[in-house]
Amino acid sequence: MIVRLIRRIFGWWHVGTIGTLLHTYFKGVKVGEDKLGNSYYVSKDRKKRWVIFAGEIEASAIPAEWHAWLHKIVDQTPLESPRVIKSWEKEHLPNQTGTVNAYYPKGALSEGGVRQKSTGDYEAWTPGN
Image 1 (tube, helix red, strand yellow):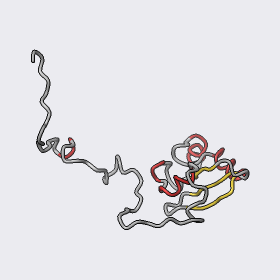
Image 2: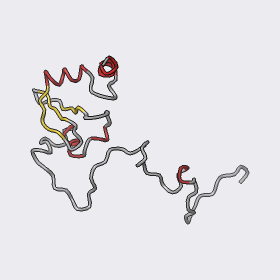
Image 3: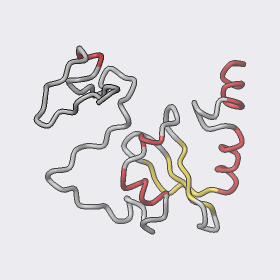
């Protein structure tokens, strides 16, 4: 219980702090929630927008349509004007770096560190040339 309280007060990178939650309670209006459970708010004067993350705070966990609303690229929330999903679009994924799902190209050290030669491959500079 004490650890959770201390984490809530000082651990802004894990969860919303008490200050953020109080500000949201007194000055915010909830406008929606995304598939990941993140909640989106606007100030009562409609000037500021913010998100309260469902889990650990990770900016890449915000879907593109909500990102556009947060940064005032669009005026309506994705709930007010749902966008048409194109056939070539993939489902949004948060940043996978540092997880088992991270992408490693063939030349990465974790993949053996050997890449295929390509035409026009560079030549290393040697002194005296």
